Length: 112
Image (cartoon, rainbow, N blue to C red; front, side, top):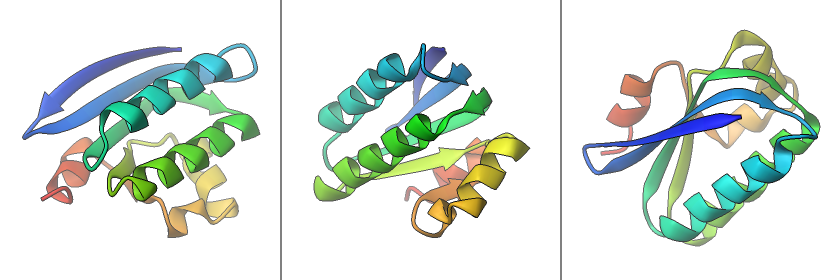
């Protein structure tokens, strides 16, 4: 799993690439934990267009991170989900409380 960080209009955007599976889930958890810790009260967009597979532990990590952001008055937004991963969020109904947008631009427009 790889990630790139950039900032647009004062919002941090993390672009993920690869797979979230047993061999990478600790790295994924560490990344999201540090994002939540370093961005208290802020919005972070996680662009997942490069994520081709995610296991259930990855979903759990996203839920935990979402809660951490919410507790600290921040916001975590997801965008650019691959169809299979988007379906995972629909089946588990996580898309009902985690903000998910089709594009990075749409996600960014919801930050203001």
